[in-house]
Image 1 (tube, rainbow, N blue to C red):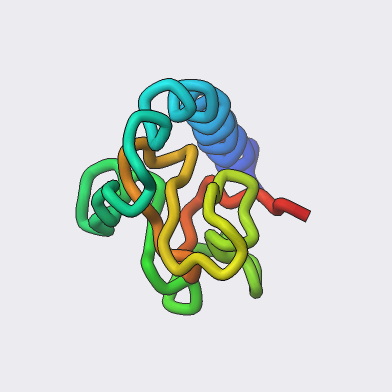
Image 2 (tube, rainbow, N blue to C red; image 1 turned 30 degrees about the horizontal axis):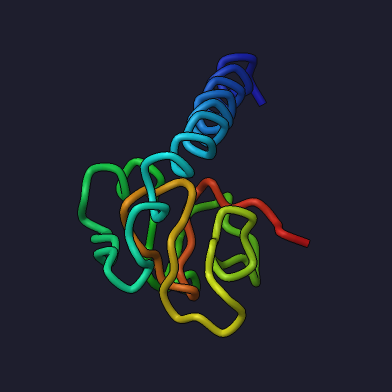
Length: 111
């Protein structure tokens, strides 16, 4: 592996970590707090923000090399749904709901 590819991977990881760290508190202020979760629109995978985080409604369809088997929104730290919820707010995508079976590059194990 070249130093350049390691540096590029490190920079990408740092950008994603910074985005997640920034989005988490902001989501609490701007996200679902002011609106009932059911009123929030579903995240459009074609939106700019969803594409930036490689979001998909179907985790099994992700071809992102960072995707781990079994990783999906429902078992992510950022997912704010009740157990069994099909759609719920997410800290990464304020003012939107994500599908429980979805996935994005900000996935972080809740367990």
